[in-house]
Length: 333
Image 1: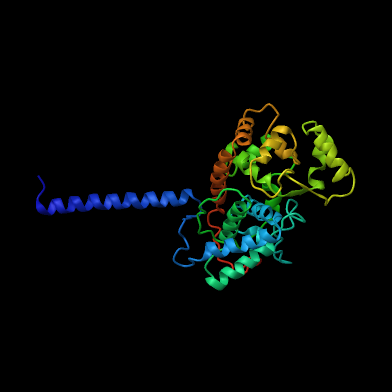
Image 2: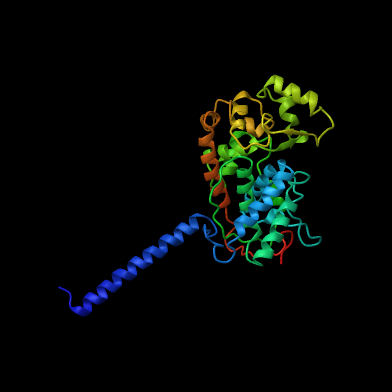
């Protein structure tokens, strides 16, 4: 039997052990979300944040529906290069560093910077020096999808803005439009993302446009492309020479509606990019089944896409890289 004093110390040690275990649980749970992110990170310091971001995105999408796809792509290109740290938003600084904006996959292609700038200005007016550009971009991507008719999801917040950027990292890390399935799987696995994430996130190509220069090789050289589809594009949008900047919708039936039409196009072999068609029809068992499932069930695609976006948004910068809350998304403080 315990004496009064020993019972007190025993109960105290048990209580301390449970507190320690609880703290470890929250620590590990936060780490699993990447960068120690949490859903209510700005609840006390910037309660109007999400409403401000959504109004800014809604204004931009109302003015130009294509901008929704552009903002979503901006987020992907940020996160896939050294984590979700707003590095893609930094302008080049002569004599200091060359940023990602003019890297091969981004030059004359990425757009939407001015939308993020405008939202950032509104956020700064509401809560100065509080919200990172990286978090604004993550919220804007979610709202862009939802405003185009796609799913919504809770965005974990608390990212920091990097003080560095790398054109070389952008050239190396971003999947090229002519990539085959093994390359795509390898590049996604390097980020901790699997075949389901790859397939679901590729569904972002249900909205937006692509330049002739990016898909010319697919419609001229690949037998995997539907013959009539490729011929129509060659005749109307993408000549064998010239017209590099001509645009075609990634999903021609409803290019500004976020739905599962992209996957139906994949099954019909009517997609613009070689890297998209690589997900289906090559006799692979890795992604074919997922493509068929999403083509048949838009609800399943929406759920998997939302989950994959949370995982993508959890990609963290390298340990020890620090960060800040930029006052202007285009330059470090």
